[in-house]
Image (cartoon, rainbow, N blue to C red; front, side):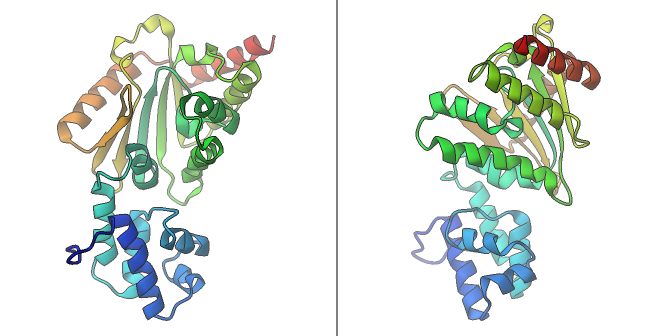
Length: 270
């Protein structure tokens, strides 16, 4: 699909405008369209108002509902390729919901996907003090990807030192570790600690995440000092996958990890 001549809208704004235009032309309410896609009716409102970005599944459903040949899917592709979409928003809104397998490495913090509200709040209060509550709610909503009909498999590697870093204070850390222990028992979530004794030079440079999507493509997200970067570049993906394998070779088994988390909870409570 080619952009309209003189169209100054971002791909995301164009998606929202076209969705509303096609819905009204078909004389459908938001509730009626939600039944055709299908999705919750509030999602239609959020996307039309620009509060949520569409997913690939939603774009495909919209094309089917209006009898279109890939119009909304093409717009979705432009959104996901747009440099205007911030790297973190792109990962959360476009990548995570489409992932079959997620893998992450975190040397300093509990992974964002597994953070509870208080732990996330303690991080944002110092790292990003503006709009703290909005950011906290956005972060803790991410866990909802495991509630869908086809949740991803998530393999999280965490440096052991994270268990002994009282982000937000002792009570906050204890609550977070209990939450982490609970999530580690989810059938789709595997948490493994990399012991401090391993040294783990390969993992000291930055946190990163890998995603394998439903269409077989692979994407990586890597942190830097100032921001982060999301890319599907084959060489970049290959380098991150190699680094992940090196780190995972040093990781403790799931059962040993769960025991270490329990031990850390007892330590901080004493």
